Amino acid sequence: MEVAEKPGKLGGMFRALRYRNYRLFFIGQGISLIGTWMQQIALSWLVYRLTDSVFLLGAVTFSSQIPSFLLGPFAGVMADKFERRKVLVVTQALSMVQASTLAALVLTQTIEIWHILTLSAVLGVINAFDVATRQAFVVQMVEKREDLSNGIALNSSLFNMARLVGPSIAGLLIAAVGEGMCILINAVSYIAVISSLLLMRLKPFVPVEKKEKVWRSLQEGFGYAYNFPPIRALILIVGLLSLFGMPFSVLLPVFARDILHGGANTLGFLMGASGVGALTGALFLAQRKSVLGLGKIIIFTMLLFGSALIAFSFSKTLIISLLLMLFVGFGMIVSMASCNTLLQTIVDEEKRGRVMSLYATAFMGMAPIGSMLASSVAELIGVNYTLAACGLLCGLSIIPFAMRLGKLRQMVWPVYQRLGIVPEIATGLHTASTLTAPPEER
Image (cartoon, rainbow, N blue to C red; front, side, top):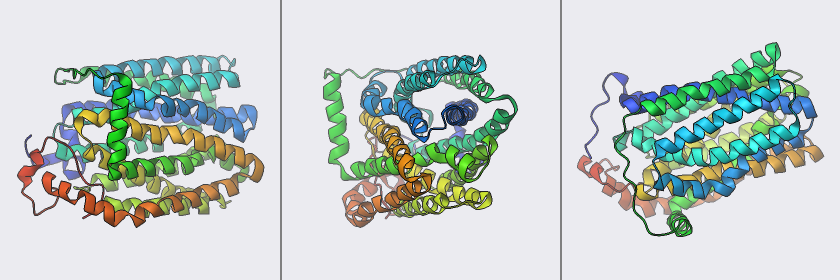
């Protein structure tokens, strides 16, 4: 593999956009993600408007995300065995059908809560395969591996730019014409990402001939991730953050309407503020040129995220709540994206799909469990104390990682040297074909 050239006109922060395939993906995915966030806000508001139930808010999130927990590892095997672009085209087309069906039910005013739960579960099954494949697909779009971390960071920036724009538009549209139009726009937006995938120029796919069965392949991938402590620690962090931290988004409609006494536009502003913070965090990561130092950054941002959640849970003023949402978004995305970047850097190519499926399982699989627990507890003690407890648990969950940081650094130091991540090592070592890199700072 060639050593990276200097970024040129796009500059270091946007160097992954030099690659045609990544640019196509960036544009198509950006349009689609705006629609996705619009649907998410519309659906949350619709459920709370129809039911006035915090529990059902959690139940809808649970039904949409639990399939990732159950099917994620199998999806990782598929990502390693089949052409990833074709898998993504199929999952995006199926997602478009799901959104179209949901939009039709809402616009014709025939929607019922069981429709929402069922269609959310269908989308969850689709996403189980989509997320694992998408994570593994990034490396095919960014040809030079030294630009991979930038591509992941830009992808996070894109996700959170959409998170800023989508909810803000959705809040205004819901107030003007109702939730159905937001969902319909999401259905149409899938055309952009499907088109971008079809326009890509990729190397011919050569399937890896393997005789072992799916279960054996799963065992191999799990054993690989579990037996290398840095990978195990990163996936655990993602799982705990998802379990204790992600429920905040499920509870936001309650804060918007009952605590801050606003409407759908207030919910959009809260999500938008979180998106601004997350976008700032993603751009912060994009300008970094190395994984060096990310271990300490993860510790800091996990503590920041937990503290901001605790403060937000007791805020009754919109301005203060919006400000705290900036820190919530920043802490969340920097923690998640840092773990993603390190995992993408550390994993062997032949096991990438399976390891990233474990990441997806931890990220999307633990969230529904946390959402159900948080919504159930909120029915008993209120959303304020529930969210405060979530923030406290997020802060406490990073302590074991912080205590082991030095040992993890020692374990991966030889890998720094082999890949040339350590400045003293010749840059020619970047040609190493096996991706293994440390998840800690120097």
